[in-house]
Length: 318
Ligand code: ADP
Image 1 (tube, helix red, strand yellow):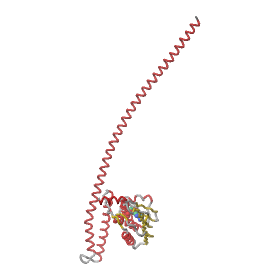
Image 2: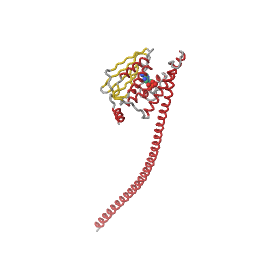
Image 3: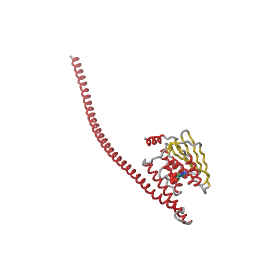
Image 4: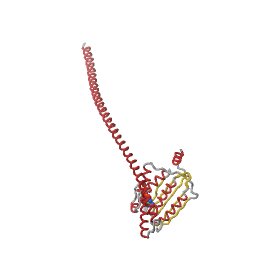
């Protein structure tokens, strides 16, 4: 009997113990579940807050973007208006200036009656200044047209550069008169017949040569024209003051001059900017290599038959 009672008591205690442990475990589980539900809710809240914030930010950004786009459009419009204004102003200035130059030249030549030496000297100085002003106006007109995409090239398919190269050499010799600078040239013959705007290629050549002559006080200047496969490579080297490497990019931007450029009055800082863009319009490239104190070499390479000019020609034919 005792044994039975003891065994029953043991079994009851064991069952009670198990039940107690089970209820404790359930309680803990419930608590953990509750905690989990609470953190889930908090997470949910955080998520929706974040979503709201992202939405607000996106709206903000979209509004700012639209504002920027409007400002960009306005700036572009202002730029076009500026270019149109400059182009028409330059054009309007050129006409009377040409008349002034022509009449001054007639008077200086004695076509309107005799002029004495002093008067001729004064008239020649007026002519020089007038021509300089005309060159400036032409440069401004060119860069304005280029920057506003209004530049039209006069493309020919059978351009012979011989006379242009001859003019360039004569100009160099004239500009170097009175200076201790020798001029050399080395030109491959025959010069290939190319597709180009001849007047614009001449403009680039004259710009490079006149810069070399302007900045070089002693030593030599050389012009080289070489055929490189289906491209033409033109090189103008001088023994002038040279250009710092950090200025290599800047000098091709409009109105940018180095200290040397500023010291030589009469420049505008437009020549190289125009030349680079003209060469690029011929699918070519223009670049400089230079060392301060040793001189500069300007190169430009243009293909004999530029692809984009072919398209221009086709558009004109159509
Ligand atoms: P400009 O000659 O009217 O000043 P360019 O655009 O032709 O304008 O040249 C820009 C600048 O580049 C010049 O002012 C000068 O500082 C520099 N430069 C151009 N060519 C030479 C050169 N051959 N030697 C030294 N500096 C040069």
